[in-house]
Image (cartoon, rainbow, N blue to C red; front, side):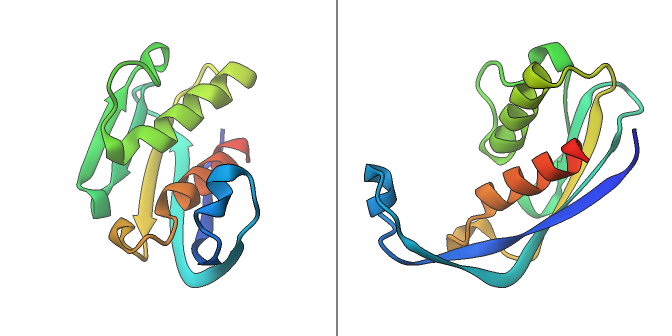
Length: 125
């Protein structure tokens, strides 16, 4: 396994943001701020996540515990995405993830979706 770094832009819903809840389209644009995710093999063979901008420092879970129980909000999207990824593409080596965000989740620019997309692209690489 190699080290992979991927970034994804934030997004801004311009029109119809509530219509997507009912299956209708909305008008969205990317913003010039990105969220970066670096994925590397885990030395401890545990899933390890660090996201300093969210106050997460070396959050750890064994592969057999991924996505189970009550998960902290700051790690929920990436942890569940990784659990689903491993169901589809079983791996024996866990990963260590570092996330760095150019924008705060408080602005509603899609940091959850950006982190999920960037993580899945990096781990798939």
